[in-house]
Image (cartoon, rainbow, N blue to C red; front, side, top):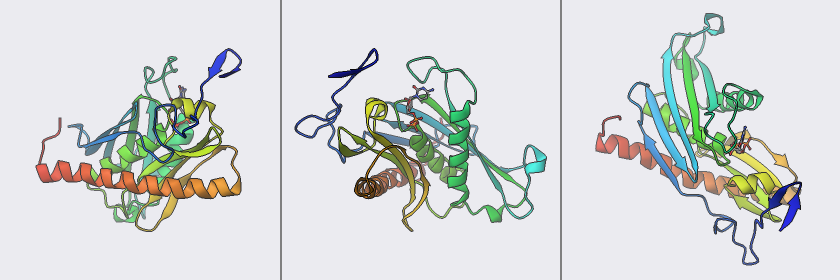
Length: 247
Ligand code: CDP
């Protein structure tokens, strides 16, 4: 163990190549997705992903507020990502900080590129993402939840949008970073994939990687997204094949 300031830096990768929680480098944290978790929204989904707990609710297509944002040829897609004050170890100040605004913007843009917005001119499709418990990868968990919620609301889309963060920990490229890996690792790269076309509609990176590591990370992320895609489809099948009522 080394130390950075007062904080102990944990060993992120064992000599056997296992991670801080015992996972292999290409292993996802456990994911549970429930489609239709809320009664009031037009569509909703709850995602537990590792220690993340994220709820998404979708409303629309509905009247645009504020009115001047209305577009005559298509629906606008508005996402609000929010972290609950109790979602992190140190109480987060409630409300939309810069980080939440940036995440809301990139998620709105990701969904704008898959929703058939021109089918609903002069309307708004509103996506609310509430992070109830955070442990790294919350924007990806939010995208997965929102995507299932959009499908639950019957919004026509090119495809579902699986997302995952890849990164570099202990010198190795790893899938789906948890908090310690995000905090103390060398790089963190969230991405969202349109599975059918292979198009990336969100890609961000903090940290440092070589060109080879970046290429390996993209491959690992795409494989991870495809595995998550299967779980998203299963969640929708469970909801509609079973005909379960919303909570
Ligand atoms: O959550 P995500 O990885 O998409 O975003 P991030 O900005 O890389 O944040 C990584 C993690 O840091 C979050 O998931 C939280 O666990 C934590 N965090 C926090 O404790 N307090 C904040 N104000 C923001 C993030």
